[in-house]
Image (cartoon, rainbow, N blue to C red):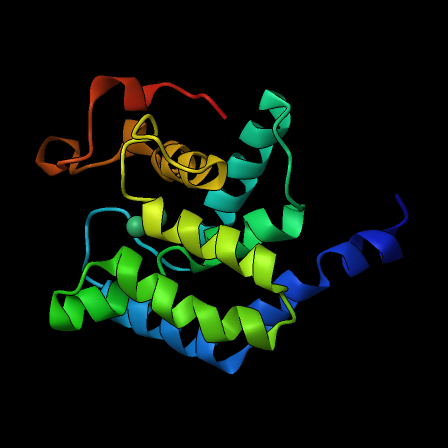
Length: 169
Ligand SMILES: [Fe+2]
Ligand SMILES: [Fe+2]
C-alpha cells in the first residue's frame, strides 16, 4: 500500500488524536498519574493496546472490522480514567460516555460506534467472559501492553501474575 493510502486509511484515528477533547483528557490523565508508580494510561498505553489488539486479531484471522475501529477503541478505552480518579465512577463506563461524541465528531458511522463502545465497556472484564470480539481483544491487549518484567511495584500490583513476565506480542 502506498504511503498516501496508508495515511488516508487511518485519517479518522488521527482526527481523534488531534481533537481538543482527546488532548484535554489525556493531559488530565497525565497530570493525575504524575506520581503513579503503576502503569499509566495516556497516549502511549493507547498506542500499545492498539497495536497489540490489531496484531492479535490479525493473527486470529478475525479481522472483521477495520484497523481504524480497533485503534479508535484502543485510544479511547481509558479516556475516562480521570473521571474515575475524581468521582469513583468506573472508567470503562466513563470512557464509553466520553468516546461517543468524539467518534461522532470524527466521522465514525453508527455500526462502527456500536462495536467500539461495546469494546470499551467490556475492556476490564475477563477475555473469556462472553465478550464481543473487540472487547476480548482489548481485554487481552490491555494486559499484554504492560512491561511487568521490569516493573518495580510488581508485588503491589493487583493485576500482576507470573505469566505477565512473558512476551506474547
Ligand atoms: Fe482500563
Ligand atoms: Fe488500559
